[in-house]
Structures are given as structure tokens and as C-alpha cells.
Amino acid sequence: MRALFTTGGLIGIFCEEPTHFGRGRAVGLVDLPIQRSSVTNLPIGQSSSIRGMLRSFLVLNGKKELAESVFGSEPGEVETRAGHVDISDAKLLLMAVRSVVGLFCWLTCPTCLNDLCRALIRVKEVTDKSLSNLHLPKELLESLEEILKKQVPKGGALVPRNSENVIEIHGKLVLLDGEIELEAKSDENVNALAEPLSNFVVPAEGYLKNVFKRRFAIVEDDVFKFATERGLEVATRIRTNYETKTVERGGLWSEEYLPAFSFLFSEVYFHRRVPTEEGEVEADEFRKFMEFIDSKRVFVGGKEGVGKGLVYLKAYYERDTA
Image 1 (cartoon, rainbow, N blue to C red):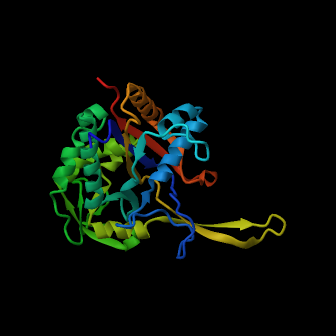
Image 2: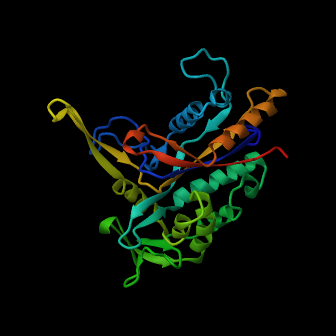
Image 3: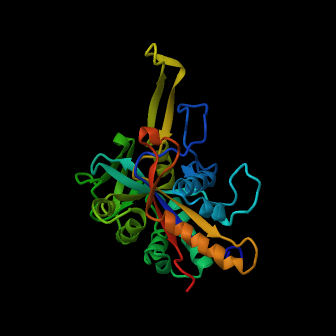
């Protein structure tokens, strides 16, 4: 990959409000479902959605020139320049699921952890830098590799020693009002992972970061998939006729949302358009782009009018060429 790209990084997406990565109308229980992977059926944010969100954020904040430098000419315009950033689909790493005790639990599974592990390896390979040089927790990759050697027990969950989600009487993790009931098994490797993972996932120091280390669990892939099917927020909305104060014909629909506190990540890579001296200038534009979106709050999904779609972005990238 080093031959394909000059540098790269990760963008963390922390959902501060329920978030809708929409895919349009569908025939089913929910009229407007969220985007899902065709392979795993897990929720994702398609790369076009992430790209559009970031481009819009730059333009609305007076950075149209930077947006065109990074993403290329505006859609519909005569192509005057090509983009030089490749953005992957945003993959779900953690989903907040309501718990019988501890209020809610951040759930993940081996497949999602492996996705992050592979992404870290790719970014490290492309940048030829250590994770700490990319401002990533240096223990994160090592902790992921260790936990992936573990087998999640059938019908069980791996939890930290001091988990707040385990019912002490019988040592079970009960989620979604009893739809998921698992035998909790505390594991030192979960504690070792929780610390760097909290630094990667949670936006800032304080309450949420401390809570994360005690409300985190790793479950089987199938259990996690079930949670992403049953644990999403579904809102029913109506459109009324202002004169009659009644629901308009066809004005009743339902929308699906990823719960607040869920976390996704996307890989982003820079490639030079042409191998000229302009390459370094373009690389500087990439770093300016990553710097500008770092630690920013943006809306995604077009539902900001009803308080949905607020996410916090964290950019992990090579700060300079030294």
C-alpha cells in the first residue's frame, strides 16, 4: 500500500445524538432504514456519505478552496481538478445498547475489533510511522491483537473486571430488556484494551471516558448483529396539514437511527495526482484538511432539524513530514 498512497490516517466518528446514515425508502418494518454492509449486515456509513459530510463542512466554514483541492471540483461543474483523497466506508466499532444494570453498555464483537486492527496495520504501513506519531494510543494495536486471540464463550461475553453491567447475583449481562442474556466472564485482556480504546473512542477526558472502561463488553458476532437489528432507535414521524391539523396522506413514516454514543471509524488515504514537485504541496493540503476537521462537531444524515445526526470527529494523521 505504500506504493499506492503517500500518507493516510483514520477518522473517528462518535455519535453524540442518534444518527441516520440513510439509504432511501425500503419495503419493510422501517420506511427509512440505515445503511448496512451487504456482507455482514452490520450498520455502516457509506464512503459517499462521509465524503459529502466532510466536503459540506469545509464549504460551509469558508474552506471551499481546500475542499476542491482535497475532493476535486464540485459535482456538476466542469472537471478542473481531480481529488486526491480516498475515504473508506465508516465501519461500526461500538454500539451503545441499553442494559438492565449500568444504564447502557458499549458492545463490540471480534469482527469489528478485527476491522479496526487491520485498519491500524494499513495506516501504519502507508505512513511508515508508529501509532504514537499518528496520535493514536500506542498500546491499541497490541491490545487488539491480544484480545483477538481470545475466544468469546458461546452464550457469553467478555467484560472488564469492574463491569457495571453485570448483575452480581448471577453474573449475567442482560441487554435490551432481556432479549440478550449472556454469561459474563471478566478478562484481564479486556481491561488492557479498555484503556487505549477509551482514548481512541471517547471525545474528551471526564465522565464518559471513565464510564467506558466499566461499561464495555465483547460478544459473539451473531449476538452483536442481533443487537444492531433490535437495538436501533426507530422514530415514527408525521407531516400534518396546517389547515385541518390532520396527518396528510402519505405523511406517516418511520426512521431508523444508530443510538447516541455509538462509534464508527473510516480510513482516509492521500495519493498524489501526478508525481511532480506539486506533490508535497498537495500533501500539505491533506494535512490542513485533517487538521481542520479534527475535534469538530458536524451534522450527518440531514436530520439536524429534529436534533439528530450530531457527531464528533477525531482525526488521526501524520502531523508533519519530518
